[in-house]
Image (cartoon, rainbow, N blue to C red; front, side, top):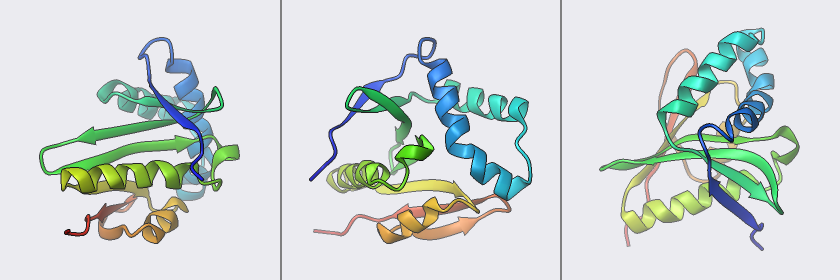
Length: 151
């Protein structure tokens, strides 16, 4: 049974602090694992850059803001820029449901669904389980893609 997730457009000014808090909570553990330390100033800059570059949505469940979703639809693919969940909402089916919704959308539009994930993030296991394949990698990220089945 699907979770009663509601997405609402994020307001760049009003939701800035909420989104910053979610970003930092979602990334802190993996940043420390991958890079050895958490630099608040550097992470504020990463957050601000991403926040200003593409429209985001606030992920809510039963009226509570639990994450941020940012998806960009391009002419040849859909790019899942960000899916950030507060740690207490990770591994509870929220991410799977949101990704599967994007997969359904990609299938309807006949577009590939692409994303990138930090190399030491455990989220890559979820993406693999959902059928994403690794397409390339850098020193810091894995790039993955899901190709909708032809019908």
